[in-house]
Amino acid sequence: MIVQQEVDLQPFNTLAVPATAERLCAVTTLGELQDALALAQAEHLHLHVLGGGSNVVLHPRLKGLVVQMRIQGREILERLPDSVLLRVGAGENWHELVEWCLGQGLYGLENLALIPGTVGAAPVQNIGAYGVEIFRFIERVEGLTLPDGESVCLSAQRCEFAYRDSVFKNRLRNRFIITAVVLRLPLFFTPEISYPALREQLTAEQAGELTARAVFNAVCHVRRTRLPDPQTIPNCGSFFKNPLVSWFLYEHLQNLYPTMPSYDVPAQPGVAPLRKLAAAWLIDQAGWRGKVFGQIKVHDHQALVLTNPNRVGADAVLAAAEAISRDVKERFGVVLEMEPQVFGG
Ligand SMILES: Cc1cc2nc3c(=O)[nH]c(=O)nc-3n(C[C@H](O)[C@H](O)[C@H](O)COP(=O)(O)OP(=O)(O)OC[C@H]3O[C@@H](n4cnc5c(N)ncnc54)[C@H](O)[C@@H]3O)c2cc1C
Image (cartoon, rainbow, N blue to C red; front, top):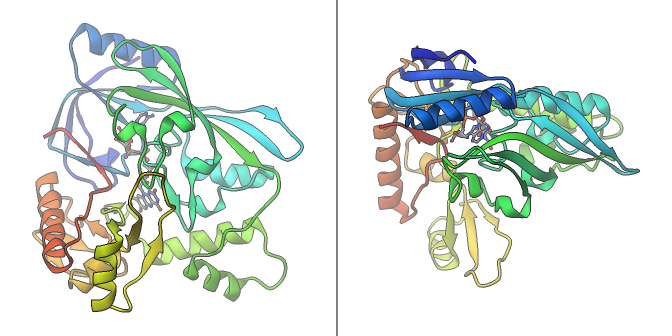
């Protein structure tokens, strides 16, 4: 395991904020990860785990040890008549996995095509797009606990998955490193095309039978037309989660704005009913789409995405996010929660 010092992290985060890691090591095996943990423990270093850096805001200097997850591997553990159990290394590229599964006749992940980042980060925020969330397919998550390095396997239930949330963002934040994800994938394709833009795209393209490949292609097309490519316009995807609000607030806003989009939230025992609003709509209504604050620009085609064309630092990004959420709170009484994780500071 090679540990580098004072490493430039700008190439390793899709928002392209300038940042330096005091120390950095890329781990490709479980053994290397254990060595990194031992080093962090021996030298009392704070440990940060980085996958593809597509959902983080990095402060200029990260003290301690940044571990870049690079563990590879795809292994079929079990084959049943209707499904397959697949174990994937946490450092595998997410989109490449989706495409590979499609080629193998393993279905379910089509709607999650083109989400940047690694497989190990997918359970962290329970990635989701176009009506599908990854939790549906997760059987278990394997990893090491911090700081002791104990090997632990968490069932999907123990991952406490919720909308863009899991135990890894809460109770196990900075206390668990995911090394592999075990997925149960169906061998039969069931289309999920409830999302209007996806349906429109499929109607335009699809002449005959609806296939998983057609859904995959449509998802890729919709994403390419609506979302900026981080390679050319630095960004970290949706900057805010869609807010869950009380029915009281929802009805109040619905009366004021009858065209406001909103979505069902599955009822939970003991929890007052909630309604999900579209953060992009609120930000757009508040006049932020296409606007520049400091040097941060709200994307022209998607108000949820903050872009960093001049590659400025975390302070500018967080100041823009703060100004937007303050404005949305004042206008609509809705609190926006940030989606990316902030490192350092
Ligand atoms: C253009 C664009 C579009 C996007 N679209 C979507 C979308 O449609 N849906 C969606 O859900 N997200 C989306 N995202 C956000 C992002 O791609 C996902 O959250 C992705 O899963 C992050 O993966 P990563 O490897 O880059 O994680 P990183 O950004 O490196 O890390 C994110 C968090 O996960 C933690 N983490 C990473 N790997 C591990 C590990 N092995 N063990 C423990 N913790 C770990 C990190 O410590 C950090 O807290 C988008 C981002 C961009 C830039």
